[in-house]
Length: 395
Image 1 (cartoon, helix red, strand yellow):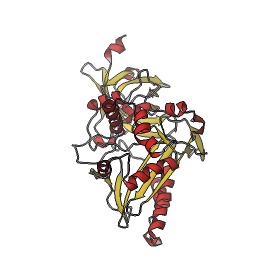
Image 2: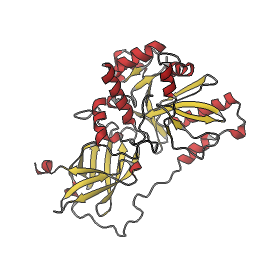
Image 3: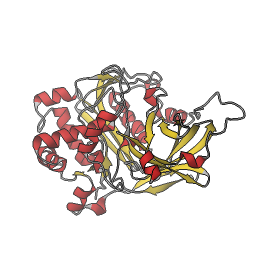
Image 4: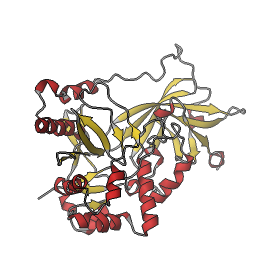
């Protein structure tokens, strides 16, 4: 019996001017959950990272916009579209779009369980199944390796249900990605319609990978040799194993000498040694105290694209409960100096943390008026500014 593994990132479109801003999206636990339509409509309020077609950036929300486009033009739900237009025609009978589809087919008991490695415990922990209908197109696909390879076979053979022109467009390079110069024997990677394009030891290699909470996937194929591979994993860090497995098999296929093979194990070890970034390298000593008591910094702060963040005081520290977002998260504040803070983003499911800058601004009357958060590192220090809801504060 095959276990179903969630897939992420469908092969549709990509923006090279809008960086990933998943924390702007509301999940199933929100009072008003987002939908592909609402996610698409909020794009107008999100900051642009770069001028159009000047730099590669990955953005899940653009895949969601593609789903909204398909549903609008066809009048069908994405579930119906994929089953009727793709999966049924390819004999992909073990593929589903979201958990509701899986439940409706009576196959929920075959859904693989996801895990996350915890360094503190030196063990894997269970993580909840990700259910994110608002992220349709950037995730929500559930399949098996044997089903997925049927789709890869159609890409290799350039067969239906995709037209000849469609196959041509899928692999046409659209932008240049952020190339890793420490990875020898690989050419500069290009990005097509959801597919990466590169050459390895002179051989064209096309692929696609993705991850979500507790799961990961990778596929590669070599069109000239009509050879492909699909690897799925049910851990959040499965990508390290995927890279080693896929490229080792390609090395064997191409009969690459040992001294011309890349050491993926060594690369993974080096990436784990990344040092912590000092967000504020030039703080005064001692730090400048906040202008106002911490209680004055609490309240609701709103942004047209990111919605509302409610800042609370918890155990003498500022704190935000954002478990209604796509990725269920919380934020805790550590004072740095003056109105500057270090804000720690914590994923509720995986317990993973990430530190970012946060700053408060006061108005001319001396009251807290804005909260700025470094949600988008690609903006090079430019913060996302939320306005404090004075009306709510006065109620």
